[in-house]
Length: 389
Image (cartoon, rainbow, N blue to C red; front, side, top):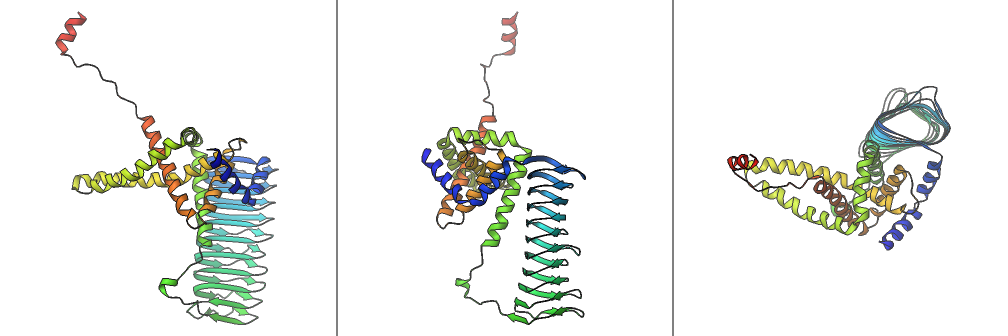
């Protein structure tokens, strides 16, 4: 147990951003719940951490803003950086630092003094927004806001309809310069298709198309970094949301693993072997198939929870001797597991450990909550009545 803590703590030391984050936490405030609102006119003199289903940030934040949730709306003056992940992320107002955001739909309408990095299924910057440098990747990427310097863009379709101060680089199937596009530098794009330039669009420098590098199917590789970053943000979103809504339950579940890790692993192993077999056997008959579907859905939920529980367990283990706020412990756990998932072979071991610990915690809690029935000797009602008489 002591060796495990030393290893995990050493890994945490490698994560410099985590400690920068942790130092900020000491002077920060936490807001959690189903609906979290910071009102207009409210001034927060420190870093803010927010997690909830619906998050709305107004007023002034005199520090960094970290947020996670399903629907996030920001219309505030943030004097530091903004780092947010959620299903729908809408960032407006003014940001004095950088913006990092990931989600299903990410919309930027803010004036950002420094850089913005956006990732999602649909990424859009609104007219009126402004950033220094922009990195945006999405299935659909639409740039309507001003970029003062360079824009690095990626997606199945990329549309530029604004002023770009220097160069544009894009990796896309379809690149379109709309009527409002004005690129002061050059445009370099990797695509099999020609650029679509509308009347009124303008490029001062050269426009260069390059074919995406062709590889044999067996040798094709994709850059895993964007996917890893997006996965990290989405994992952090789910983890923070569950921690905000069920803080006591997550503590109880991880307490079980902290007190008896060996038992938790054994239970998880039994569950990971037995449940899939039970699901397969259930599909043998038509009636059993209904049970199999229910078990399958339940098992998927357990596996999804496993990542959150294993992350919280890891974070609490790292800070065993120096207790930290639950959100800090959760962030530490998610970050450490994400780092381990980047290392070949180690990532397989980590995935197995996450499944075993996570499912073991859930199954053990289910057994603890199931009361053991008490039985008494069956007697004939008439004899029982006579005895009472």
